[in-house]
Image 1 (cartoon, rainbow, N blue to C red):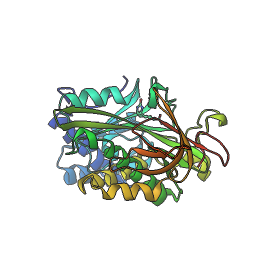
Image 2 (image 1 turned 180 degrees about the vertical axis):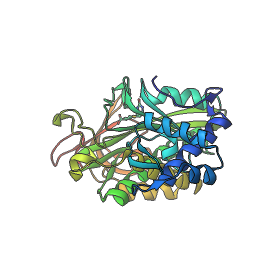
Image 3 (image 1 turned 135 degrees about the vertical axis):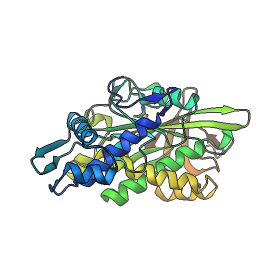
Image 4 (image 1 turned 180 degrees about the horizontal axis):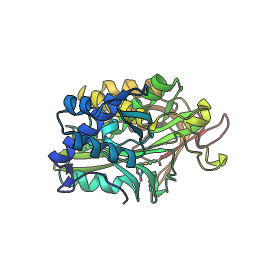
Length: 338
Ligand code: BTN
């Protein structure tokens, strides 16, 4: 693991001093603004209630983190800033976002944090993963430019309903892609995000339960943002490829986390299934669902109240599939076709 910036207590949360530093850094960036104006050290010190020396130290840290801040006789000027989801770059979440430049997998770090009691909505984000994991034990190529993160949720549901957190995440991601970038994203069961016939994002969840209560559901999300996904045959596509320009990973993450938190706060009740249906690309399609144990083919006719897929087989029976890889058959015959 490379480059964690602040002190973490008990492996699972920032120390109070770390949260103060993160907020100060965010405050400095906000005061400098993006318009290139010069802001005096005195003004920053007065507004944030810290010494001039402390301002200078934070400026040095920001510069080391990739912020191009010019120091002039009249003060500081922000000339350029990196698109890196540092905790201070996501206002309101200073104590919850843990950024790494490189990790094996954000899933492992988030699991350790969740097991040792981190708060809900803790997010572990990495610029690159050396051992990124996909569903069904597949690797998830995680090169620079993509957005890779795991968010810890603690929904008040039983283990049976834990899949709903996953569905909520895919619905919210599709909505954010549509609202922030105008991308007509749809969800292939259970939670691949498709757009323009390619896979734009994948979600992976891990659950831990005690007796009849869920302890945590960690949701790992990989979005092809500004990276060039592996060869065309994989059926992957990135936001940059679709829009013809790079977009901010930081803004995408911030938009997702805000909306996802609001969606979870609204409760994971049956309404969620309707929301999933409104953005899904699978119902009504001929599908082949492959799990580690079986293969089910037929028409995807519905999802049940926990998001399991109901497939009508050619023999006329109905089978409920709880997990697996879903292939849409026909009309282009591709694993990721919509
Ligand atoms: C899939 O479509 O197979 C799921 C892909 C999930 C990838 C994300 S990237 C962030 C998190 N860390 C991982 O190792 N995997 C998930």
